[in-house]
Length: 254
Image (tube, rainbow, N blue to C red):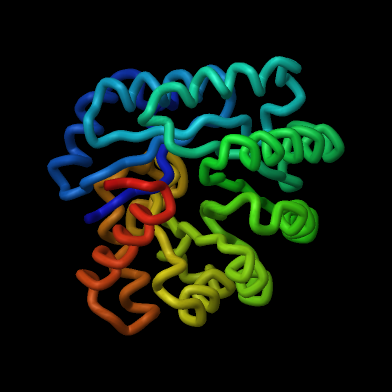
């Protein structure tokens, strides 16, 4: 199965043609899309999309960019969202020191609070990590044997990846893998086993080459699979089959 494990079809960039773009993704051969929540409103919209479309699932969580505006009763709201059986993970949560839309201490506070929640409900976690490798690694180590999931749009080193694999994490890769300057990403993909790799688009962001700079969608997922196949010197079919199995195992999909 061809599975996009991280998309944002609730984003306002799709307000004028959301149904058409989702239909295009299905017709392109994408079997399952996991729409990721980035704050409480986005998580609710993701849950609603999952209810509307049989092949869409959702996650619920608060992205580090939104932690400054996060109410204290957020965890109760996340519990409510998880009552939808098609909300299958908590995320995206984590740390982002690149843009600093929320200060570091607030990000760390909500990262820990949501990791505590994940450990309690025992759902997979979807982690966002941008320029915060050391602090992210330190945080997930605290939850060894309690929390597992994925690092989406993985941009860390191969050394960090090895540590995360020991902790039971997988890595999803998107359009960045098709960029010529993504040397670190290419090194990681070449050197970790395919059983740890997932496919994502992060659409509408990070469209792959040759569509870089345009609005992204799951119809481009094949281009990411092709690049991973090239980097690992295997067939595209093998990449699609194995990453689909990985996603099913990680998120409990049938």
